[in-house]
Image (tube, rainbow, N blue to C red):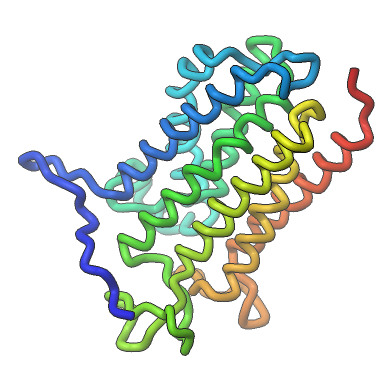
Length: 269
């Protein structure tokens, strides 16, 4: 399949250039917040009928979501993927327009922001993380679609009929690994968490939805890493298949398992 002719630039106003990647971030945040507000209004879903915050408080928290994702995502990329280059030129850390964001860093930034907010409000931190788990998959899906539009993070050469000839990827078709991640981490994981929160009332066991998200994301990411090419300046870490994405996903997997075990074994009023 030829790569679709989609301009990574959505529109430009004079010297200001707006890319689909930036719009995907914003859309993911605001759609996620909107979905979160709907869940917060369903008080019967939550333990003791007490959500971790009100819908209006979630709207106020949106600013901190943006800060957590951007700061965490950028610092995560700097520390995990190219520390020496940024050590040589520290000001390049601020050059967000040149790209370079880490999901794992953005995830840690978002979790930290939610934990601090819930602690400040005296709310259940695990329920706050459950709320993030319900909403984060929307942003994951849109972000991976934007990666596809940018023609980046593509996979290895394939003979499958849905292989795509990416610009900068040579003349051979490659796995559209961005779309694999979008479908697994975004669509499928959203449906799984939705089933557990609404059919199995998982939100009444604080930490359970967050644990399911951690397990689902980590397994999806590790699976897709077998098809996705590693960053060129890092390559494979060992064995000709181990990548940085796999290594960074393992702590999330273990944390997810721990949260599920804790939520299932702890008694809730």
